[in-house]
Image 1: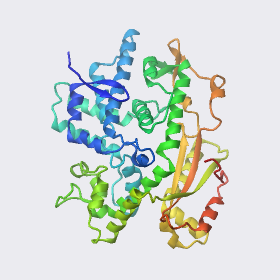
Image 2: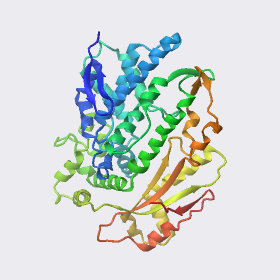
Image 3: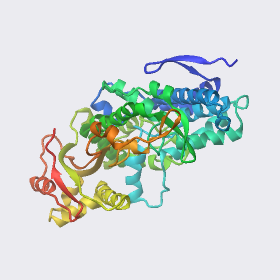
Image 4: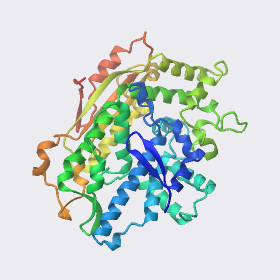
Length: 462
């Protein structure tokens, strides 16, 4: 009998941890997650949102074990021998959930989605990189430093690394990662939600659909699952992409871009490397956490103008002199022939994230280029996890243990008429006592790009 450690989690209550999971948790690589906020700049809007990737990873591990054990029990009861799940495989799933976020950088997604792409625009020689790459490298570091062969093999570690890449379900977005952060984030943000993943775990079964086996749910469960997708939409609308939270993220990114070459990791090391290059060097990346802002503040202002600018931006955050959202154009979709055309169109909209696009627009509107440095454009989309389509389209359902389809007539009265909203936001970087250029604001609100598929309209809701 394996003795498990019990810890108390504010979301899931008493959680039992396998001894090998405890060994992983008690490593510098995992403890590093304590210093990485789950929601980045959201804590400047919701003061309670200061939880970290550390507790989220433990919660994800717990749910991975709960779901796999529930499926294991049902598979055994139904005699589905070809689908049997072993106890070792359950342990690997728990470890996969535990380790899936090890590669995150400061303020979670800020480093790989905002900071690094901008650095790479200026330095094309830098390698492509995502935080998932570093999660795999961190796993190697951990299992090189702890005893594991009393429970798993080297082959199992490779299996765990494969699991990490699929821990987020791309088919229908129903996965234990989201179940934990939806519940945990809502709790810490002070937002209510109706989705109950405990119920979903009890009802999940492995059922055959068109010759393939899928985790499936009873047709009667569709409304609870839609609550899950609605929770996603709500969190993005009210928290993850809140205009002020995004303004803080943009300011932190600007400060890090200014200070990049002056920051060294490990801190104080003679042969340390800068922030942008640390992402591929694990000895340095181990030190890259939210504490990077303290390191920026410790830099001497008189050494370089960029350092002074970086510290000034961080000081503005503390004084609540934030970048202001001064324009927001809602993109209204028109009919498009197929999903490929929609994908191309979406990509063209995302170009607004690049300064060159804003520069081109200013030039077309005969606006002086010296205004460029004072503005930032942001592409924002709110949806239910399946872009502009119903998220329930890709969910597998069953009735009486047989594959069953959910018809439009059964659910149409409860679903929204549209599943996605897209905005192009315009931020002003000037200080409180300054005002943005009125001509720029007027032209932005009147903007109609030469695309036949949409007409930007002024947003009227608050």
